[in-house]
Image (tube, rainbow, N blue to C red; front, side, top):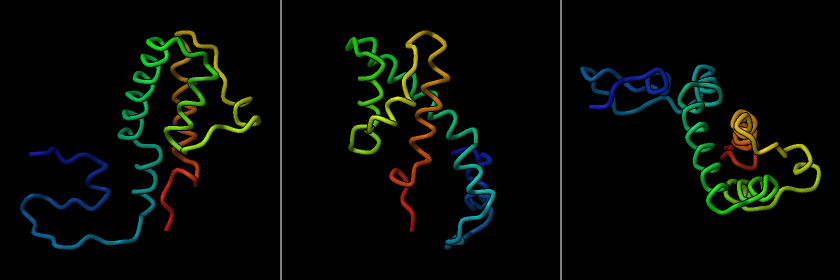
Amino acid sequence: LVPSDLLMRSLGRPNREQVVTTRPPELSTLQALNLSNGEWLNRWIQQGVKRWLRKQADKGWSDERLVKEIFEAALSREPDKSELGLLTFDGQSESQPQLEDILWMLLMLPEFQLIQ
């Protein structure tokens, strides 16, 4: 049994007592807010940052190389010079919030999202 959290309820998950065969196909404002700024996305970004920082430490990557690897994984391309200039960080322990911002920014790009 999966607990019903705010994200699942905003996406239209019914109560266990209800039998529902369809869900509304339109995206509501609540769904958009939960998917772009909710706790679910925040948790996934934090886990991703930890994984990327471990990979950077294991492989000895520079900050620039880490940003390039993240772009490759997310967008299948390297960042251009203007993007790379904006996305460098200092590689210290306080770099986690900076890297979270980079991942969030990439997830919000139209290139990353499936837009119908």
